[in-house]
Length: 366
Image 1 (cartoon, rainbow, N blue to C red):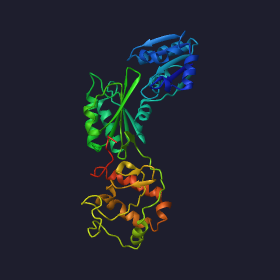
Image 2 (tube, helix red, strand yellow):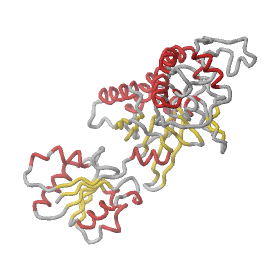
Image 3 (cartoon, helix red, strand yellow):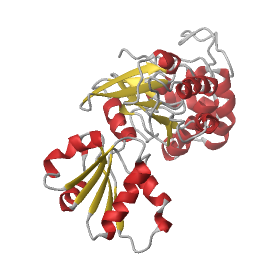
Image 4 (tube, rainbow, N blue to C red):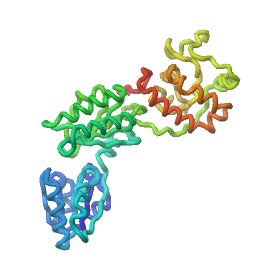
């Protein structure tokens, strides 16, 4: 039996099944640094310690030992199927007959790093910036389309002392297709044990200290920072009391009494800034509970505060949503029964207006 095992990013994250298979194995095959994490469970076993770059030889050795009737464990850091030894093994799976094998998953760098940063992951692209085996133009193409698709992006193997060009290309490409204020999480493992995490803006990424032990997570158009943590909201419906005058405003709205654009006659004008569009004086998405556009909870009050959100007051946003609201929201009850559809409309509109200058919650010092 050949077990392709991921031991995670740190020893405490190794799965129980991975530990069991390592203990059961007769032979252990691994890149030398990985053995340090499992020394206590490999005593008395045949150890085949190899250097970086001989991955195919490791697999061939595993097959040879398995043919001798031994239980073999091939060790990968993280997950064996994400830039790990499983990819190498399955490349030659049809070269031999009668092989017994299994893949034991592990905590990969993207999820491990995400846990250190908060909750930055949503729909996700994982891209290695190593061009040792992959053409640079292929890496650039993947980054471009992941950015256009507004995916959260995790970069593995971002930069070494001798290999910097892919990282340079990644920074340039991202700035072409993503807002430069987008939050970026950087997680580096120091000496194989200590984890250091920090958050910057995309426009600052190029000048950050980055090495091969770093994982980078690029947020999408809705990712924001709150209390020092990256958050990419999924769009769950949250219920709280509507502002007092909301019903009065929308009763006029339902009757066609709609103030389009600025309402400079209002005693409170301007509420947010002197460029605002007042069509939706009361936001149809309230409470969105999504801080990416500047709103936030008033702590311990169960009140969603929109004071710093001027997104709904942008002409381009109003143009996108006005017809939909007029056609689909006919009563106050619709704000509740159709809330999920409204929040999906909001997500779609945030992407379409992602290049607008509005009060994004990209402050990193909270």
